[in-house]
Amino acid sequence: MQVSDPPEPPSRTDAAAPVSALPAELEAVVQRWNPQGMALLRAVAGVGSASGVVLIGPDDAGTTLLRTELARFEPHVDLTDPVADARTAVETTSPSGGAPAAVALILLDAGITLGAAILDMVRGLRAGGTRVLLAMNGIHAHQDWRTVLDRDLALLAGEGITDIDIVPVSARLAVAARTSGDTALLDRSGLAALHAELIAATLGAAEDGDDRLAAVRVRVLTDTRARIVEQVGSLRAGSAAVRLREERSTVLAGRDGGRAAAMSTLRSQLHLARLDLMTEVGARVRALHTAARAELDRLGRSDIGDYPDRLQRAVTELANAVDADIEHRLAELASRVGGPDPGPVRRDPPPRVGPDPEPRQRGVEDHLVIALGASAGVGLGRLVVSPFSLVPALDVASVPVTLLLGAGVAAWVVRARGQLADRNHLRQWVADALVNVKAQLEQRVGTAMVESEAQLSERVVRSSNERMVEVDRRAAELEARLRRYIAEQPGQLAACERDIETVDHWMASASPGTNDQR
Image (cartoon, rainbow, N blue to C red):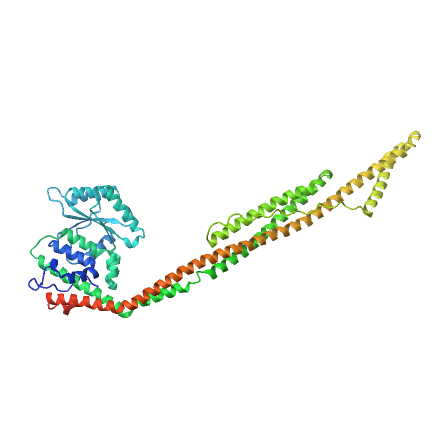
């Protein structure tokens, strides 16, 4: 919709009535379809011709585009070159020896809250009798512009300035609306609302006021008629019904609430967690076995009997560490699935290393070691007492000495061989016990995974059921809207045609050539 080229205004003699005297039915039509145009009509009806407006803001591309788009609206509003320095804005609007400007338009940044300099400038301009208008430019580039707008209004209210509103505008949206002919997008750009504010603030009485008012009236009515015709085309094309059907299909496509994808992800994550925990259990058991072998090599004969208890304490610490790993991994899974932390898992008693090792059974090997030890002892004794044989008096005494040394060496050999055999026996028992411990820990991991799979699956099903209920509710709502739209479409078309007839009737009575231009 082009807002810069309105139809030719009717002459003053052809005008059926002033703007303020529009029929109530026509005024209701304009208010319903073009509220911003109605605001413009009321502003024009209260005042006359436009005067200049001092523009205070940055001299950049955004300001230039805003001035260009405002220039397309009628009545035309004269904007001065932008004054970028807030400190000199008061001097610009109120030069030395002259009357202050009637209106000043201050452009605010949509991404930054206004500062103390802007507040001081607003107070100074208002003190000089200048009417201040505030516009937040560039709202298309900032998603949080509404938050900034609320903060700016709160700052103004804190200064006692409550009679000034901030108009959010976007010249780029206005360009897009003008290019596509989208009147709704033009309303969202805020340019029409800002133009109406400027007109209400700047227009004064003049000789050509009636002609200007008639031109504005014809432009607003033409714009209103174009909006109604656009709605009629949309109703006949059924674009709203098509959009509702597409939205309903999109909603129903996700009716399972993502259950299949969530369950597949949950199973894969549980399988990965099981593999990781099994690997961690194997690594911890191997590390414990290595430490146990090293400790057995340093173990004394008196400590061998207490070693099973020490191994049991080490296995208990290992089981606690594995339980902590399981809880940590399940907490990660629960956070990925969504929902509260499942809390600590059920902890079973630590695995037992089994019964204490049985006493080592002595065999032929032990008897052979005794014989070898005695033989070695006798030989060593003979070697030691061989010098005594040179003395005849000591030759008889060498026999018992030889026997005693042989017995002592034999006892030592037997004792050393027994200690080595006991260590080997205990080492084999440790290996068998840790194999059993590893199996129990792996069973503990598997049990925890199975129980967690049941809990997490229930949570996924419950969450997907809630989403399914929401999807069904949304689909039913869209279905109801679609049926209501189809049922109301004939009535809406008839109402639109009546509104078009109302506008056409007044435009034909106001200017016989107006209808020929639409």
